[in-house]
Amino acid sequence: MARILWFRRDLRIHDNPALVAATEAAYADGDGVVIPVVLIDPSLWPTWGAAKQAYLVDSLKSLDASLGDNLLIQHGRAQDVIPAIAKQFDVSGVHYASDFSEYGIKRDGEIAQSLELLGIEFIATGSGYAVAPGRVTKDDGTFYKVYTPFYKMWMKHGWRAPAADPQVWPTWATPDTRHGYPERPDTGNIVIPPAGEAAALERFEWFLDNAVDDYRDNRNIPSIDGTSRLSIALKWGEVHPRTLLARLNDSPGQETFRKEIAWREFYADVAFNRQDTIEGYFNPLYTQMRYDTGAAADEKFAAWCDGRTGFPFVDAGMRQLKAEGWMHNRVRMVVASFLIKDLHLEWTRGAKYFFDMLLDGDLASNSHGWQWTAGCGTDASPYYRVFNPIGQGEKFDPTGEYIRKFVPELAHLSNKDIHQPWAVLGGLDHGYPAPIVDHAVERQEALARLAELPKGAQKPPYPATD
Ligand SMILES: Cc1cc2nc3c(=O)[nH]c(=O)nc-3n(C[C@H](O)[C@H](O)[C@H](O)COP(=O)(O)OP(=O)(O)OC[C@H]3O[C@@H](n4cnc5c(N)ncnc54)[C@H](O)[C@@H]3O)c2cc1C
Image (cartoon, rainbow, N blue to C red):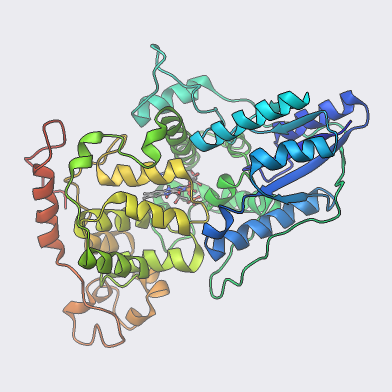
């Protein structure tokens, strides 16, 4: 009897423990046949932007090629499709890697019940993390709410070596000749990065050879290609974080990189323990923060999304998001701060837009990245720390190269003037808008709203950290 290997957020064949388990079980059964399956949920697919859809189609094609063109793509609700095809193909077991989201846990529980009734095994092996969420705990068994002690315990806990490839690969088989690829939409000018496992591993090698040694210094400069850009591959499981960690030594650049991977693991752990924080506040006191709504707020939100706030560094970031489905981390922090503290819009609004647009959109990292900025998350950046959108550009894009790339209307300005085009003669001549708010005024407004929060939220006196 064959086995099904259900690929979810693990679109790779190497360092894939579920694949190894399915293979071993298939040979134990006798014939070594594994049916590789991917599901497209029709209730989710249309909600994705064109870039995400196109990227996933590319990634599936890459996976399919490594499976000898045998990937079976099914469309439907997993709770209906998985038991149905398991029965139809008369398999003895369905293999998969664990999912730790509230939705995923519930879905997998329902499928387990249906398969049990059919006498078919449902076997989870591995996860998309070096250390599965829920494993790193304090001595009293509770989860860490602050990153640094989590990191220390995560390091102490350690993780397995990358899973070796099966000694003998299975016989991949598709009992259905229709592959069922969803249509790859036209993405216009959006640059879709190379997708799939081979591309991710190639990028990692490039990063190790060319960028990791300077990563600690360069990772904050968005005009430099100085970060791994592996967040998209990690999100879709085209590479396992353990594969990356296994190659790192303790040099400053490599250690900093390991610490960033650990942020992803930390946020996944917090989200697993507090599933409510994907959409809700980690610190509930901040639910009382006064945010703007209504037509004027909607207009500001639209300007932010479109990259026409009149603040060049912010607009460059928002335009990078539209152009590439990705944004540099430093700029993510600045645009998030701007939405919350200059425009006084609720963080959930920005988080939703990010999640829809980002090819690496990950519920845990995204919601907690936003909550960090909004002051209501773990390790919360002090709310009174209002990023100065001009100063951040001057500091992290001193030559204006990043701004020039994404905001060509400002390309004619000098390295200095490009950060405040409204202040120079001819600065707005090429259609770039004037600032939609006065940062100094809005900073005071943000601090005034903070002061309204009940006891327990961060309170004045506020240092001048602007
Ligand atoms: C408001 C906001 C929203 C964010 N939303 C997401 C998201 O939806 N998905 C996502 O993967 N990251 C998110 N991040 C974190 C971070 O911006 C990206 O992981 C990073 O920019 C990806 O680029 P990279 O792969 O070149 O990162 P590198 O600098 O090369 O880092 C290596 C890896 O470490 C992890 N990592 C790095 N920084 C963080 C971080 N702050 N939090 C969690 N993991 C981190 C990522 O997996 C990343 O690929 C968000 C950050 C902010 C401030």
